[in-house]
Length: 399
Image 1 (cartoon, rainbow, N blue to C red):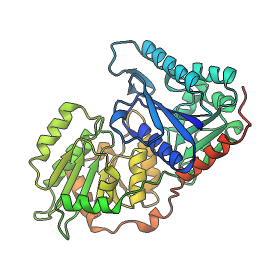
Image 2 (cartoon, rainbow, N blue to C red; image 1 turned 90 degrees about the vertical axis):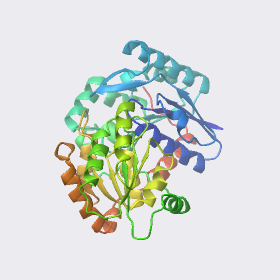
Image 3 (cartoon, helix red, strand yellow; image 1 turned 180 degrees about the horizontal axis):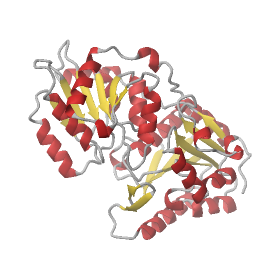
């Protein structure tokens, strides 16, 4: 039985842990005799569907309070105390689980360098353990990432600690090698895997439309700000825009606020939604992909998972990306919009009138089928191939 330990970056929203769970699920389906231990601080890991042969260790939560700045989310402890606690737990997991492969999400040395003790132990006691760094397509503005990575020794860490770097994107859309000034020693370890394909269940999608009593000719819009921590503006503006839609349009809407939205904001939006005919308000759903498949159009932010779902389902979409404290979503949405995939609205320009106008236009247009065919959705098979190769070969990175 091969053992994989997965470290999931987890300081904001649901995106990272959902993405890494999708990777883990596919690995378990495609590689025999594999056991996975997921290490994460996600506050909602217990509510997500977990595959067999996967268990998790829940770290104390951190939360992002600015670009590169963190604090304890729940504990009345200093950041240093919580990071030390998390680091000790990660080290204990590595010592006792003894992974054949370590997969790290996004941060080469972990949040606030919390993986360093674990790496030191692996080098000294488990040198045969392979290491993969998973990077999504876009991290942030290039000047920010290059400065941060140079200051924190991330390029050097990749050179000396990692066997492979897998980028979950397409170089033709956004090229991290160029934009983030990867040195040659890092480039040699990089593979572009494409985006993650999300699968829906056609029967569940049909059942969703039946359950919502969607009639022939009616259109259903899904509104989702991902985890929801900063999604108030998108939902609030959409609900106001509904009042500007043509009378008798019969438009139906499902709003999914996300479990990370502050309670006071969620309750305000819930009460507002009750005043709008044809609106169903949900805090969270484990069937978001099937719900998106059942929808005729999507209004969303531009997190990695949401964009992968839109592209996989080939849905018409209005995308309002986050632009603060990082510009990851804006860069991703802008790069993809140039291919004609969806309409992007800068949040500083978002108004109910603009959204109503764009929504009417969107609902009248056909899906951008030719544009979606340009997107490579083979990330999961590519990751599985690399993992399989590393698990069954013996060469390893060296300090």
